[in-house]
Length: 150
Ligand code: DQA
Image (cartoon, rainbow, N blue to C red):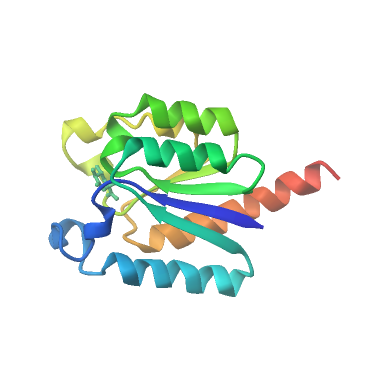
């Protein structure tokens, strides 16, 4: 099983940016935490962060028929990008939306998520553990989809 983990703009600044909201854990340590979890679960991962919407869209398109599912924290693009939503819909891969902070308790401009429409679940406000929960959820979902087609 192969899962693509995508992070949007400014997630590379974890540990530096607004630590009261996003915590002190760095992006590098988030990556090793996710990788360790994937190793424990016996699945393969590709992880990518970009500050550019088009790069994220290219990665989603390239995942078509190559990955079994996507974990995405689109960061600020969550609240602006119909293009990311369209890309997720185009490839049709099971996708889980993750937010480190609890966006539902934040500013009004963070209350819209365009990508949510293409996601099987959203995990918000569980800190970086949310990525691990998203991976577990995807694994269960992908396994149950495969059983249905047997
Ligand atoms: C975020 C929440 C977004 O509103 C914000 O723009 C981010 C990070 C989160 O993980 O909590 O950059 O996606």
